[in-house]
Image 1 (cartoon, helix red, strand yellow):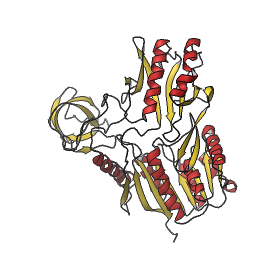
Image 2 (image 1 turned 90 degrees about the horizontal axis):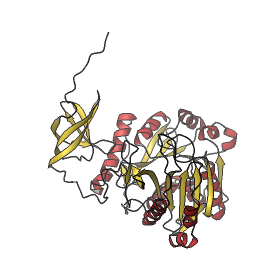
Image 3 (image 1 turned 180 degrees about the vertical axis):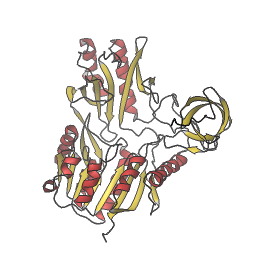
Image 4 (image 1 turned 30 degrees about the vertical axis):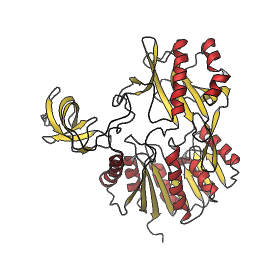
Length: 460
């Protein structure tokens, strides 16, 4: 029997007066017309605007604002000259207090709707004191137009690079280094990678910076071609690099047709192949590809929250998806025995070096997938608290099952995605939520960082 066709109440090109009711988890305004859901990019709750229908699907549509007849009381002037064209910061036009309320609501909605979880505790918030110029890493996309390099971030939903001389969320030295490189690339007409024909040399530009040591690491992501000799000569000019605070220049080789930024091989071109960073009393070694939280100012607050929870009942800790070992080292500094686990060679190598630098023998690191590590009980030993800080896709079913079999008393789940957090918490049926914190690691964006303390239901 053929499916019944439903007639949509809107069609492409329609002009409608719409009232934005709330924000979707994406940060887009959300409204309804005759029961049909419409997303309005840049729309805020309380906006009333004449809009044009730009896209329709059976379940939802997308509309663009033509003219406001009434603007939200929470709307503010966005500082960025390419907002909202650039897809990086979708909430620059929203009052910061309301940004925090939106992020708490995103977590609440995900837990209730996706996880079917009745939230037993009040959600604590840890807002950012610094809402601009906080990111310690810039990963820039490149393209070219009329012989000039375009360096910036992708327009949302596309691979079109929005060119900008500055980004208001990165630490200022990153902008200065990026613009210096732009000048050299333009002067020497460097070939920029074209993803459709898989030709060109420069695929991406990555700059890391430490606000504590004032060191920067400059990285090029390239195919296997060669840099022009005169470009290299100017790029590796020692005085220029020292004046910019660059501690090292590296090149990462990625010759595969992929959206993944980095390849497997990184070469040193000048100086060190890492930078030295500091958080609190700890010193870290960071290579180009190793994972480290991008907001050092909020990272300290996140790590302190985790330490506070662990010290409520001290004992051995396993830090899964440990990256370069930030959480592990923070806990080890407090006298806690920690095993950090990650599948990234670069991250684990950095973590081991950082443990040596800080003289923390009570912290060991293992290069394995989390699935492999948890499936091998002999390698784990006694565990009082398991910390998981997975990527956006969350924990695999194998990891969730292994947590239950590990029979660990306490789990701390750190998440950058409320949807997968809710899904995973709903599967950890032997545990109950004891505390939730929303730590704003990404001001001006719709990204949400959450830390949750779980205890076994039958534990005291």
